[in-house]
Length: 213
Ligand code: SF4
Image (cartoon, rainbow, N blue to C red; front, side):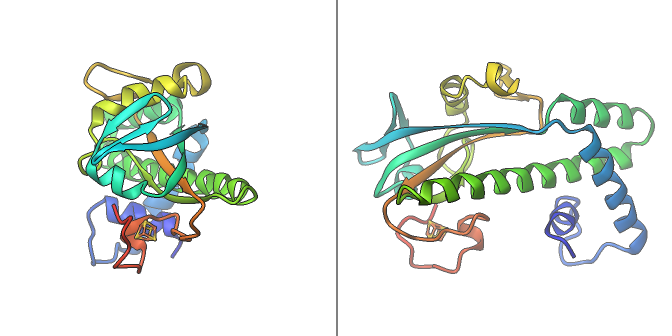
């Protein structure tokens, strides 16, 4: 089964139980609908990184107080700030579907989340390939709101990426992103060749890694 199907099934809460054929067909149809409605966009910018104190990391002029981010970026000289969105069309599709068929809207939500993940992975691999030519190797994607990396850092990251102008991504005062199927993240870049899998530390077998999030 393709990774995106597995992801959507996981988001739908099937756990170890496999979805039946009818559900799988509904998920496949929902993937097509979401893909047709999507207008994917992304932006990345590279900044210098400096660890300024125990738990503090400076990315450009932005000082981030997070122990787990600081550990994950240890040894990195650069960081990629990354923003991506599936676009407003997906929100409109899900809203329209939810008026008549809530369970189908829930499946579209799961497919949208899986597609966003897949899109981010593809973009990250492309960024990684480019940076490898300069002798830089990417760490996993790390988003505000994960662990002790406060969600409030989403605002300066979006500002540093000029997200409203570059990819049409804005944020409400309660840190909800518009379009909703969007992410921002920090990706460390180091001269140390760790070969982090794009799926991140959770999918990585290096259990004794000192950079693990
Ligand atoms: S645990 Fe694996 S994915 Fe995470 S930082 Fe270490 S090498 Fe990279």
